[in-house]
Image (tube, rainbow, N blue to C red; front, side, top):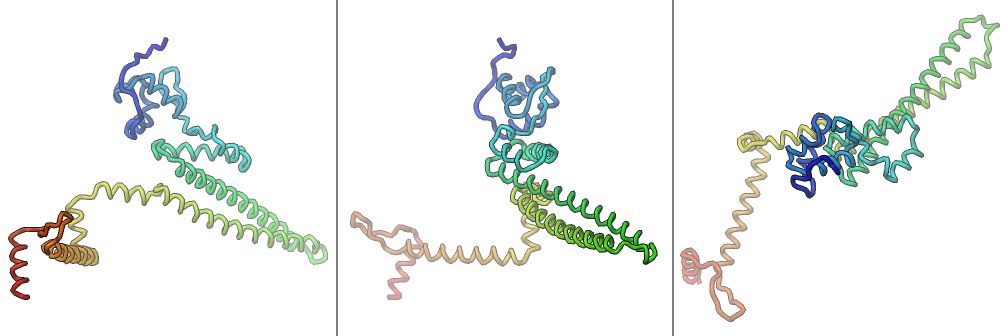
Length: 279
């Protein structure tokens, strides 16, 4: 029998509940978290173990933000696409990014995160290959320089020609890898913007949440284009309201045969009187 008393509310986890658990599961005992959230301790314990990780003997959780990706079909594909060291790097980035989003990741966002980390790994692979090319260039250039320092009669011209070909080949490879890295970086930044994961996007969300009425008024005073745009919109709305008011002042025949003005006010009577005089 479990030692935990089966008390507290149950049901779906709210976003606030999930955030609190993620932020405190490594600091607090799951029973303390349950007391704070007014949740069943068993329910909290199960959530921590199944979703976030496994608890220690002290009741705290070791975050396992692999987020069940190792149990998914995607992981089998990743194992065929990347080396063991790259997969460890993948899990490192996956853990941190999922934690940043407070474990609130939808399936489409999950695919975006996976693609973004793939691009990061491919960028790292391109840089490693570029470094290898630069090392080959430096070694070949050093050997070539040594041969050139010899007397002409002692130079190995075939070796010099081979070294020059090696240098040319690896310079072209390095340039190609630099271009590939820049393309991957651009694609990665696009994905990060789509995920609202860049610093500028985070700051924008924070600033938007802090926007006050006085701040909006200040922006309106300083932004002439915005004033003109809003003024045009308000004037169009005023004209539309006047046109609709006139339409509702006109007599209307209802389905039961009666004729009446939908908008019957003192202004309507004055409008009908003025219209009859004009006629």
